[in-house]
Image (cartoon, rainbow, N blue to C red; front, top):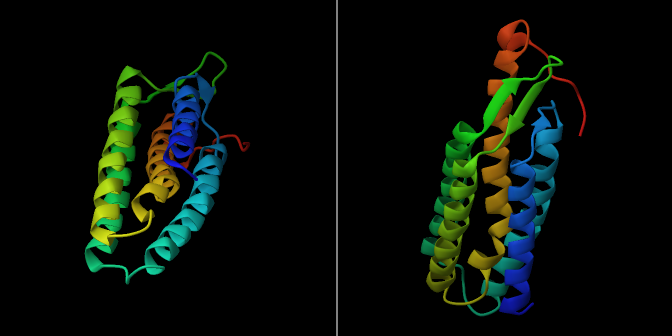
Length: 171
């Protein structure tokens, strides 16, 4: 896949994720984890492909591996930060709702920029292949998963019975 096609895919995927974040929607027990799990599967495949692309030409350097782990930790950090910017409240019908804010969008943009920089650094450290570039889906999965788990935790606290309250099941 050439760089332009990859950029279009990144813009579309991130655009869809951010768009969904900005809509008011109910907090569900499992729905918040479906997208991160799907992105995670793509992320594992992507990282496998990225490692293979490096190994065609040379061994994978320790620095590239460490930078990949750092990148994924940064994703979790951004996810935690974004979770704090998502509004969570009880709706008129008693359901718990969520909606991202302008700060949520800003953090998404900074997060994607951080991945871009870290991805280039990973690819430079690897000396070959596209490991940093194709780790985007894993980065998105970890960041979005962290964000959704923390938002859900805040939502459960608004349910009757507090932390032991139950959210509706659903996708």
